[in-house]
Image 1 (cartoon, rainbow, N blue to C red):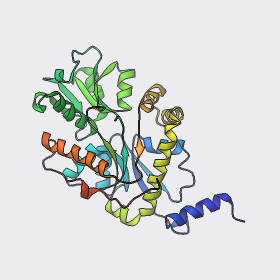
Image 2 (cartoon, rainbow, N blue to C red; image 1 turned 180 degrees about the horizontal axis):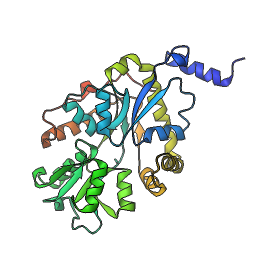
Image 3 (tube, one colour; image 1 turned 180 degrees about the vertical axis):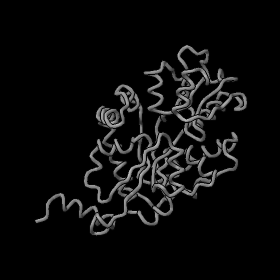
Image 4 (cartoon, rainbow, N blue to C red; image 1 turned 45 degrees about the vertical axis):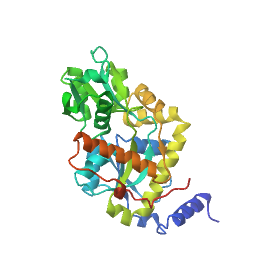
Length: 312
């Protein structure tokens, strides 16, 4: 008699038209920022009985992840629409096959608690550190536009997240545009305060990006993987404490930083690419071009592959 485990595995293989033996499946090479997706999947039990090997590659932020994807060093990963836009404008070949709605967003511009900067307009003449082309870059452009401050009146300093953190502490920059968990750490550990956040300033989506070769040869694995991510985020909505504890344990992040990060995270993994998600991304691309962040306009619609659909 077949075991329950065997029946589940057989059903999964049939549903995604996978080869008869898991040993025959090509590994799926997944890029992950700070291990967040891997930790979430493990905490939610979604790394159990995966019928293919997942090879994880960790990155501190999205830009090097996209570079690895474009170099065919990985097959798939999640990055913000701002990072995706910057890569597309530079000629990267990638397709978005899955989208997260970020809800209130997770980016912010932080400043030292005692800094004489209290509004976005106060950033005139100051230096803002950020990762070029990142969601933090997007927030700065959007916030300045909303406040009526020309981008030329602020000095943008392009730094890695680690270097920007050190530069803000030393006074080499006056503000830092970044996202959680860096924002939470800045607030709780470095005596920084949020000047402005992405909520009410700019809408964002997270793009699940894949290479053309992975789409052509690993469709079953990609479909299964994004389904697991969607179920894991549904689990996380009712298990924020467990999610924070798992992230702290597996990444070495202080528990208070992880708790604050996930207490304000609102992620919905869409079952399919929607017109609204593409429109949000297009607005980001248009804003980037208008501000001179990218050298040419980018039409994002053709870079979406709508053939990947999950059960609602």
